[in-house]
Image (cartoon, rainbow, N blue to C red; front, side, top):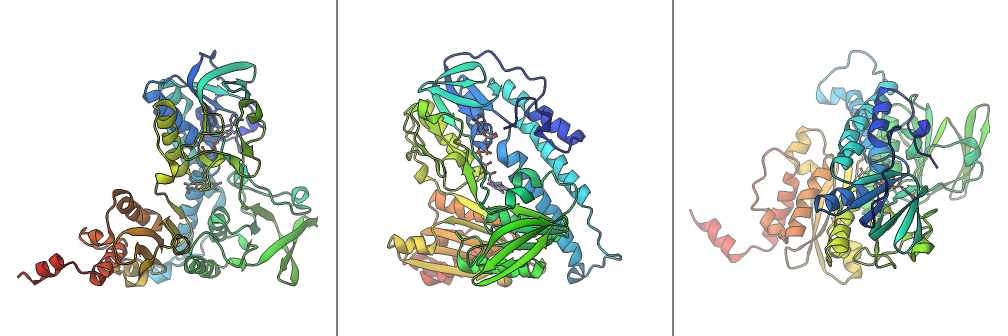
Length: 504
Ligand SMILES: Cc1cc2nc3c(=O)[nH]c(=O)nc-3n(C[C@H](O)[C@H](O)[C@H](O)COP(=O)(O)OP(=O)(O)OC[C@H]3O[C@@H](n4cnc5c(N)ncnc54)[C@H](O)[C@@H]3O)c2cc1C
C-alpha cells in the first residue's frame, strides 16, 4: 500500500504528474490535529467521499476526510478521466483511418504518436485535479488526513497515530481491480486500470481478459491506437448486463475495428518464453496459445474492505461484495454509512456521488431517502456507446409488468446518416397500454448524452407521448427519441390530439 509522500504515487514523474501529486497528495502536507468529535468522518476521497465532504462542509458540518493514496480516487486517477481521454484520441485516429468515407484524404500513412496520446491523458488528468485539490477542500473547511484509516471502536478510528472520534462516519473506500486466478499471470506480469495509463510505449500485441465495460472500452481504444488486440470473454457475449442486440452490435463493431474477438473463451495459463507472454486459451473444446506483449485484466472490481478493522466498528461486510447497507445506505452500525463502489451493485462515478448525497441527508439531517427510489442511467463508452436506464424487458417480465417497446434504428435518423454514424438504435419500453416509460437502451455514437433525456422524463414522471411535444433542434441524433415518442402517440391517439389535428 502506498505510504504518505511516496514518490511512487505517480509515474512517469513529468511536470504534469508532479502538479497532480501536488494537487492530490502534496509532499509538504501535515495532517491537522484532530478536532473532535467530528460530525462526519469520511474514509476515502473518491467521488463518493469528495461529494460527501464538500456537501456536508457547505451545510456547516465539521468534517474530516481521510485518504491513503490520491484525492479523486479511481475516477480521476485511474478510471473515468484517463479512460475517456484516451478513448477520444483513439476515436480521432479511427476517423482519420476512415477519412475517405467522409470525402477527406490523409496524404500519408497515419502514424500514431502513443507517447503524445498518453501525455495528453496526463495533461487532462492534471488539469482536472485542480478542481479536486487539497486546497479546495481546505478552503471548504474540511480537515484532510492522509494515511490508512482503521476503525478502533463504534465511534472512533485511527489514521496512523491520530485518533478521530465521530458522531457519524461514511465508508467510501471504493474498489480495486479484481485479479483473476490464472496460473502464471502474476509471474508473467499484467496490467490493470491502475497501471495502463502510465504506459509511454504502445504494446505491439495486447490481450484483454474480460468483456465488461472496462475491458471493452480499453480493448477498442488500444486497438484503434495500433495495438494488435485480442479480447477474451468467458461468456457467449460482451456486456452481460445489456440487451443481446446491443451487445451483438458491439461485437460487430469490434470485428470491424480489427479486434480479434474470442467469446466463450477462458485463459488457462500464462508463461514467458523469449521475452513474450504465451497465453493458453480454451474455447469450448478447442485449445490454442497466443503470444502477446502485454495482458490487461478487466474482470470486475474487488471492494476495499481489508484493513479497515470493520469488526471493531460492528460493520457487517463480505470480502467479495463489500459493506452491507440498507436502503438508507446505513450499515449494521447505525452511526456508520457507506457510499460508492464499496457497497453498490452499480459501480459508477455518478452513482458514487448520488449515494454520497443521500448519506449526507440521512446521516446529518435525519433524512429518510432511499437508494432504491433513484433512477440511474449508465453508459459504456465504446463506439458506438451503449447506454441504459430503468428496467430491462427481462426485469419487467420477472415483475409481471406488460411491456410495449418502441425501437427506432439510427439509420432512420437524418443526422446519424449525415454523420455516417448509422449503427445502433433507440429502444424505449413503456408499460403496455400506457405511455409510462419503464426503461430504455440506446446504442449510438452519443448514447451517453441521449440517455439523459429519457432519465429526466422518468424522474419527472413525463410520459413518452409528452416527449413527442418537445421540439428537438433539427438536425440532432436525439430525434430518434422523438420518433419513438411519435410512434407511441400513433398507437394511443388521445381524442384531444385528434381534434387538434383536424383544426385548420
Ligand atoms: C477504467 C475505468 C473506467 C471507468 N469509467 C467510468 C465512467 O466512464 N463513468 C463512470 O461513471 N464510472 C466509471 N468508472 C467507475 C468509477 O471510477 C467508480 O465507480 C468510482 O470511482 C467509485 O467512486 P468511490 O468514491 O466509491 O471509490 P474510489 O473512486 O475507488 O475511491 C475510494 C478511495 O478510498 C481510498 N481508500 C481505500 N481504503 C482506504 C483506507 N482504509 N483509508 C483511507 N483511504 C482509503 C482509496 O485510495 C480511494 O482513493 C470507471 C472505472 C474504471 C476502473
